[in-house]
Image 1 (cartoon, rainbow, N blue to C red):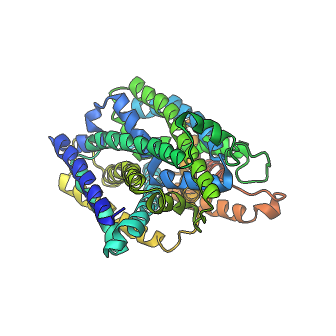
Image 2 (cartoon, helix red, strand yellow; image 1 turned 90 degrees about the vertical axis):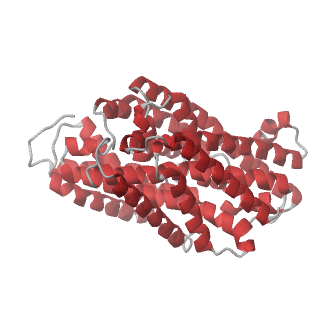
Image 3 (cartoon, rainbow, N blue to C red; image 1 turned 60 degrees about the vertical axis):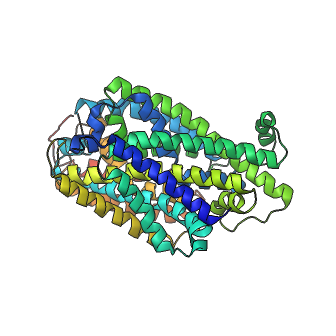
Amino acid sequence: MNPLFLASIIIGYFLLLIGISRFNQGHSDNNSFFLAGRNSAWYVVAFGMIGSSISGVTFISVPGMVGKGGFHYLQMVMGYLAGYWVVSRFLLPLYYRQKLTSIYAYLGERFGRRSHFTGSALFLISRSLGSSLRLYLVAMVLDKWILAPLGVPFWLTTMATIGLIWLYTFQSGIKTIIWTDTLQTAFLLLAVVMGIGMVGDALSIPWHDIPDQVYNSPFSDVWETNWRQPDYFLKMFVSGAFITIVMTGLDQDMMQKNLSCRSLPEAQKNMQWFSLVLVGVNLLFLMLGALLYMYCAQQQVELPAKSDELFPQLAMNTFGPTIALVFTIGLIAAAYSSADSALTALTTSFCVDLLGFQEEKGSKQTRMWVHLGMSVLLAIQILIFRQYHNDALLNQLFRIAGYTYGPLLGLYTFGMFTQRMPRDSWVPAIALLSPVLCYLIDQYSKKWLNGYIFGFELLILNGTIAFGLLQLISLSNPKTKTI
């Protein structure tokens, strides 16, 4: 399809998002920016969170992963359900009981000021890296198939990608994002369903036969029974649960939307319905991946060197203009529904946790400068990621999470399930030491653990190390505190 036409579609898409932002702008104070006045309808939040959870990485990486691992990713998705139950049952009540704007304020109340800063810093590092990785994938696709043919350099593609997000989020923040994410989730789901139908049509498979054909294909294997493999089913299930707990329940980005609901019961209802729908959406992406590999096998299409390029390459070069258009809109919807809320959450955490803002207090001008600074940070990290992308980005994303979210898992677990009071001044050191020890164990696990290779359960190891270190530094301090 003509790159200029696709570029015009993208511009029109963003004009629509900016229009929604202007419509919802109203009185754009800190209360609206941070939590939408705590008046969001749970079903709107639940639907929009699908897009925030999927992101452009899932849109491209999950179909690409099918060629190597079949439906093994579904083992992790099943673990998501257990993780969302924990978030709904334990973490949401805690946050609502304390009426938090930033969830890391809990660490300040439980342990002290330095723990509060440490939790926020861990989130800022984790989410900025994760969001940059997600946005890099989109910038890469836009550059290779749309903007580079028009003579637009990659750095300008990156700046435009971030700038457009900033443009429709800098005024009203989460109040706008709840509605823009709802629209983008609708586009995302429409794109994946249409993609399945179109690829099935290219394979001469009618709609009603697609599930059976995928099930009987060599790409539909779900279970890995070799315990030494990184995608062993028990490791994947448990890792999925813990990844959900930390990347949703201990993540300001995902929790900020939940905290904008009118009450705890509504927030819990949002989490329950959202988690069920998310399983089905991930299954659709896996089905799409199987169909893409089936098409390549049937038509003897050479596979790209990077699995992340499979879907975009076929969509842009093989299947024709309609699926190219569907792919572009779906990718943009998936990527920006995740990135816009992340940018807002980064701004919220920095303002509330590090600058001491409250819902009704704090300079609006300062908040806007912080928002701009976070945008620049994401752009710089995207340009850095371009030099090191050599694997499925979803795998890289979870590996990063294992190191950056692990100390948060240890801190919250220690705070909620013990009554001990570690020395607050030592907590930042624990947050640094825990990932280092985790890395060393990961590097030598095959030698030390009879051939065992860590996968995504690296997160659990990291959290366990942090928990143990917190236990050690609290031994000489008998003071207890319960929140």
